[in-house]
Amino acid sequence: MSSPETVVHVLRARLRAARVTYADLAQRIGMSESSIKRMFGQQDMSLSRLAHICKAAGLSMEDVLRDAADQTPHPDVLPLELESLLVAEPRLLLVAICCLGQWSLAQIVETYALTEAECVGCLAQLDRLGVIVLRPDNSYRLQVSLAFHWQPDGPAQRYLRQHVVPDYFSGDFGNDGEAVLCVPTRLTQSSAIEVVQKIRQLAAELARMQQRDLRQSAATRDGYTLLVGFRCWEFQAFTALRRPAMAAPLPLRRHQIGPRNR
Image 1 (cartoon, rainbow, N blue to C red):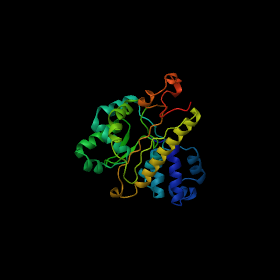
Image 2 (cartoon, helix red, strand yellow):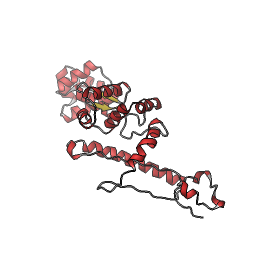
Image 3 (cartoon, rainbow, N blue to C red):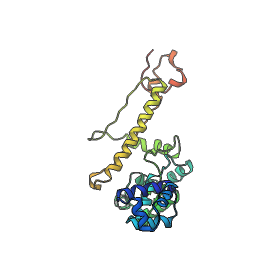
Image 4 (spheres, rainbow, N blue to C red):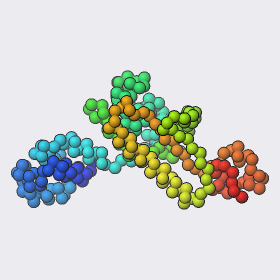
């Protein structure tokens, strides 16, 4: 739910965009300009007062509340028990992932063997679980942030490792806009932490690009998935080729990919 402060902030921005001043608003609703300023300064108002102001200013209260909801911070992860529920129901997981990709109800039903009623049922369940807010027209608003990620070693990641990763890497990555990289490195822990931060920045940028491309027609957009892993690791077949003196490396280095410098 949006905070009162966020609603007032959005309302103020909408009034400014409509070129409605506090003086204009005071005249339209029969209050003094000082009272209007005090009301906005307190950053709180009842729904009836909000509706009155929106009507007087020619604004849509629904749009104000929707914009406020879009600006409200949302969690980056889901609780473990919620991830378990999604993984346990493949259709619900499918619809949840489609929602993360901003698919419409029509796109989901057109693409997958789900009836509209089944899909709406899944959307309603995701609404009850707090993943989305389902609107009366069966559109929805995500309740997770653009930086959303699954819990480390949680149910979804375990499902991903078992089922998704083998299928994902079975492709040849030969088409335009596709790439697969394996880059062995020797880094300090501080550098490794910096790399993880850059990966998260890339994920956020990808989410931003998705939001931007939503303005394009569905026919011009296709499904792309970024699957990134970065860890201290060594391929088991390479470990088997180690010299006896290096068979028991230090714990922080036992997983690095590729041969080591001596």
